[in-house]
Length: 110
Image 1 (cartoon, rainbow, N blue to C red):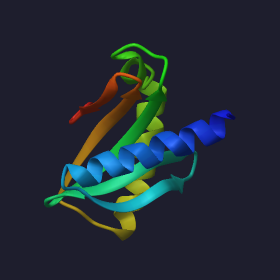
Image 2 (image 1 turned 120 degrees about the horizontal axis):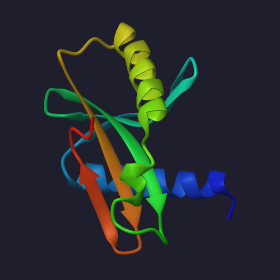
Image 3 (image 1 turned 30 degrees about the vertical axis):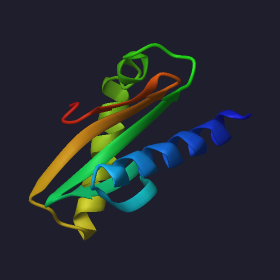
Image 4 (image 1 turned 90 degrees about the vertical axis):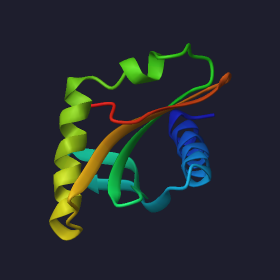
């Protein structure tokens, strides 16, 4: 399976998981400038920008560690673009890590 298809599979699994946690999915694969946000969701009155790391063969935390400062900067930039047309008072940056052992959801990851 190509990396692109793996990414789509991971994002679909993450969206399903987040819905089960009570979030409303607003956007998937949102692009703005050089940044991309895998999933934008609403958790109550908080807009959540979700980075998905699909690591079926990885170890716990390996996906979270892959979200480096550069990735965080690009996500924040894309989030600012989204918020220009969808203002929100509360925002949060999360990471959803999917491994063979299960799913870890890091709220307020950065």
